[in-house]
Image (cartoon, rainbow, N blue to C red):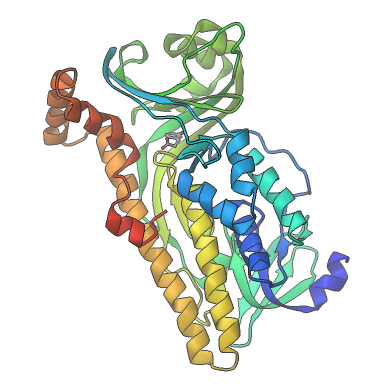
Length: 413
Ligand SMILES: O=C(O)CCc1cccc(O)c1
């Protein structure tokens, strides 16, 4: 079916965006027996660099497995399950924990792999489930009315649907159409992220996630190293007055990487990026007519610490599709249909606000701007080798609070 013929027909639902949120929405639609049509501005198979969201929680793997049997296991099989996490304070180890092995045949409690591999596996699962993709379709504008949504792409074609699951990323055109800005702060300082290609044969490293507070060889900056399938991510917490270029330039990379990893890794850089620690949530997750449902980065932006971005995109998408199904079933009962979408918007905004608070607490901890927190951290580091709880606190705090029973009930991820 060509895009032009398909575009003129009306659809019950269109999904905009083929990232983790859009692909999850497409799988959820197929699992419910509805047609799933995805519009994506990228060209099919276009390769994007970088590991991006490189960490999937067990809850996400279980959800993918439910949406398309075999998918969760496939993603887990391609990922890396590092067994140990370790924290250091100014050169001293203060905490280590090794996880038990996953039971045979079960899904692991997390996996680390580049986002693009996860997406490739999800696209393959979507094809198997009969999802229709329209690549190279860039939605340029959207108009929602009480009757439905009209999308216009950059080639001037029009796409009509009753509902749109918007998964078109942080610069979402659909969010703009909802008149719903992202609200919330970004960190004053920059974080530098570097992907390094693994070299297990010549330069093996223990497969462990480490967080180093006040790294003595990097001027006291915090440094995370995270292994993932095929490589390593290094995430450096710069100071407010640091010039990121000093860390990003080829000379800069060759200078500082050997201070935190075996020297050869200075030559194994595959991707470099920077970010500000975002804690941003859309004002509303839907439009005035309750026809557009915002998911993933169209509705929230979180820093990678805690892995709340991609992992919350999946339940966003699943809940959005659940709401669309209820709305379609409600048919002409406009009030019931609108109420189903409103419940989605409220529930996922609440989850995003919880994640935002978690991201904020992780950032506070890393910046330690208040004298009392700074003192508590120093005291905890001083006793961490004898008092395990102090080390545990320092180890977990950079990722934000764990899911509480209340948070889990609100499906915060
Ligand atoms: O371990 C996590 O929370 C997810 C992976 C991660 C953590 C911190 C920084 C980063 O760039 C990735």
